[in-house]
Image (cartoon, rainbow, N blue to C red; front, side, top):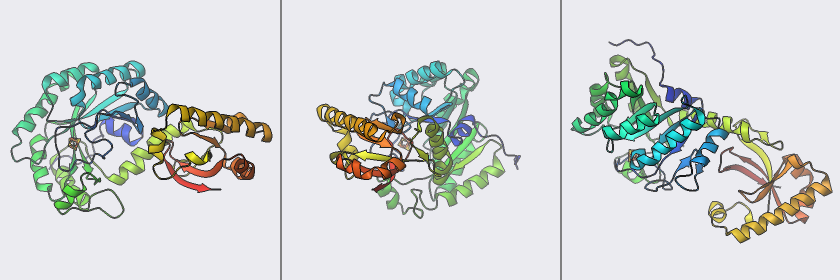
Length: 383
Ligand code: SF4
C-alpha cells in the first residue's frame, strides 16, 4: 500500500481553485473525436478564441486577452480548447506574449490531446515558457501503446523544461475498470492525476443517452460519474502517491468560477453598483424601448449596424446629460454603457426617478448581472 499522506496539488489546480487562472480557449477545433466531448455548440469545431467569457474580436487579438487577464487579476492561465496543438503557432504567440507582459512566474498550463502530440511540438511549447502539461489520452482504448508513446514525449522533456506532466480525464460511467487499467500503466510516470465529473451538453447528450446515461438532478453533470469516480479514487489511494484530484461540476461552479468572478468584480465595480452575496452586481439599467433585453437580445446586439448603433448611443448620451442636469446626478453615478447600449446607474436613483425617466422614453430595470465581460443578466425587474 502506498503512502496515504495527501501530496500537494499541482500549481495549475491551486491557482484555478482560487480563481487566479485566466481560461484561454485557444480554438474549438479538435481531431480527437471523443464521443463524450462536452464543448458547447457555440465553440465546437469553430476556430474562435475566448479569454474567460470574452470572445476575442479575432483569433490573434492577444491584447484583448491580456486586458481580460489584467481585469481578472490573473496570475496564470489554463490554455484549453478544442486542441491548442491544432493552432500551435498561435498558442506559442500567446504564451510568449503573456510571459512578456506578466513575467516568467505567470503560470501557464495547457490541455493537450495525445492525437496531435509530437516531440517537436512539445519542444516548441517548452521553449515558449510552458509550465505544466495536462494530457488527455484516449484512455479507454484496448491498445494503449500509441497513447503511452505520446505521453512519453512530454515526460522525456520534464527535466529540460522543468515542467510538470499530468493527465486530466473525465470519469465515464461504467468505465471505471478500463480507466484503472490505464492509470496502472502511468501511475509511476506522471506528476498528478486529475479527474473531472462528466458533463452533458446539447451536443453530447444524444451520444451519452444512447449509452444509457442521464443528468444528475438539476445539474449538467452526468449521473453515476461521481459514483464511479469514487471507485477510481479509492484505487488511487491504495496504489499511487502523487496528487489526485476529482473535480465535480459543482466544485467548478462554487469555487473556481465564483472566485474568478470575485477577483474581476473588484476591478470593474462602479460607484453605483452593489455587490450581491453571490458575487454579482446589483445595478439599474435604462434602456431605449428598441434595445430592451428579451428574445434574441444577444443576436440583436451583435448584428446592429454601426449607423444605428451610433445614433442610439448619441441619443442615450443626450438623455444622460439631461438627467444629470435636471436632477444633479454626479457623473460617476450615471454612465453610458456602449457595449450594451444602455445607461447604468444606481438602483436608488432609478427608483426615485422612474417617472421622469419614463417621460424621457427610457425603460428602467433593476438588474443583477455577472461581473463578466459579457455582463450576463441573472435577474431583471422592470420598474
Ligand atoms: S479532446 Fe477534448 S475537445 Fe477534443 S474531442 Fe475530446 S473532449 Fe472534445
